[in-house]
Length: 379
Image 1 (spheres, one colour):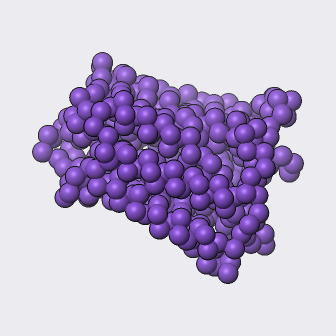
Image 2 (cartoon, one colour; image 1 turned 60 degrees about the horizontal axis):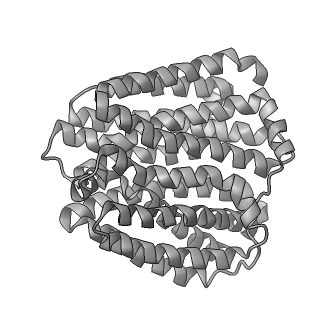
């Protein structure tokens, strides 16, 4: 029963992350289709990131007590409907409206899935959480590749129709879940939040992840436009193959202990990850498409090293209020992602790719200085 429940939850996570990120490789196509700017197209990804950033704060007050299974079913049905409408939408305003609805629903689904994973097998919580992380990475990867393939060989509308079909299957499986408990939603107190933020160790980790995910999202969100800029002949499927490097996250998350052991301490491992991240970000000025494809593997390796180690470090620092510290970590993480998906696109439109890369490198250098100057806090 536990194994079946776990497989259903993993399937649901993969589909939800596919819904989130399937749009990324086809944003240049949507920009042409709706006659909109790079910045407007970038909002399709940024809006969900922003919702995930603020959800740990607000969902605790909206969803104080709610059945996880019911919330999962209703939210998945809403996503099923909105994805059909995304395929039918013929204006930017209509498309963006349904994307906003999705942005409001996705955090509710991920909250339910995390609650279920934490409760279906309490003896293996750590393993289940690593399964969650690996599933989110796999979902982001599958969604992007799948989107590029379908939009190239059929049309972009079928990306959303097929996601609706996958969501319908997930509703069928969710009904078979044995878990009937409530979703674990944190209701944060201002005093608790300020207490955590006064601890410089937490603010350091939160800033590290804000900056790192800002840079990561900025690059991955603008890559499809950069590819089209370098070659107008490049297809959506070829663009989506760039995201294969995203799979490095699974390798890193499953080997985090070995990586930390090799570099001796968590903070040293984070610093090494940032050095790699900076070197590769600098190299992204290159105009060769094959070289870009290979560089993204190392780019993802650097980012996921920082992310995986930072997550473990944040979770190990405080024995009480773990759900609040984790929620705040996600707020900073996704806020960095939301702003990173949007603000660099403004710079890209006005000044071009090279200026974006220079500014992103400055942010990585700032992060490295932060890690170096505050390393004594973690000794």
